[in-house]
Image (cartoon, rainbow, N blue to C red; front, side, top):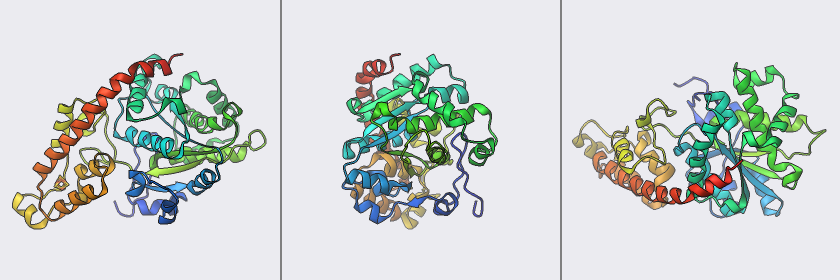
Length: 368
Ligand code: SF4
């Protein structure tokens, strides 16, 4: 893949051949030690370099340090159960809600699932209830959050219409490639979501941080371009963003395939199914046990290690030990996978109990 260009496509399949080249190609800034030092308790994603790049995170931190108004914004497309990619964004906004006391804006992008996946709004609502119960079970405090469906939030669609006047087709093509107009309009709607927290109804302009996967950068760029072009009508502050790396599928592909449910975990998987998926996942083991004892495994290539790195081992020392035991050949893949499968099954069991308790609350939040 060397030499191939990185492709960021929020509507399709992104191809990241080299993360280090993204800074130059897309004008992103790295999350440096200097930035990390300004954050009292960096999240697991920040500490481990999973959240690796940003636009104007420093400005968001300035605002926080000066006690200026801030907010954090993200969302989910209700087309599927909550998977680990949705969990990453959810973990991040929950982190900013807890550590920075930031108000959360969480959008259920049902208009996007309508235009992109042809999911009727009523069907999307049912999926969204489960999604909202998931994020509440992960720890989002609904008292300091505004959770809404795009289809019910007129302010967002009104903004989308206004913004669409300011951007040409060529501009959209340069960001998203050739797409049908529905997807372009979904992009304007996303810009409306990102700027909603700055409307007068929510106390006006503020520093809004949008933590997203790197494939979502075109939406951030579009929104920032719009802010510059609507200066005569709105006094928006440029939104900030952080970018996390994309997690590979359990089969090792760069993006999970919804056609193959064995290739990704969802938070509603039964613990037994999840264990099966993990035991069948791609690892970084050698051809034989003898070879692995001699040469050690390759955690850098292993999706089981990636699961622990991204989600399931919070303690850095514990993660380091797994890495070293793997590298030195002290642990073999069979035993390691069993151990990780147990950790994941336990997490899912506890999460699903909490999720069940939040279903009524989720229904109440999404009532019309
Ligand atoms: Fe992956 Fe564990 Fe095998 Fe190492 S021992 S390659 S971390 S499954």
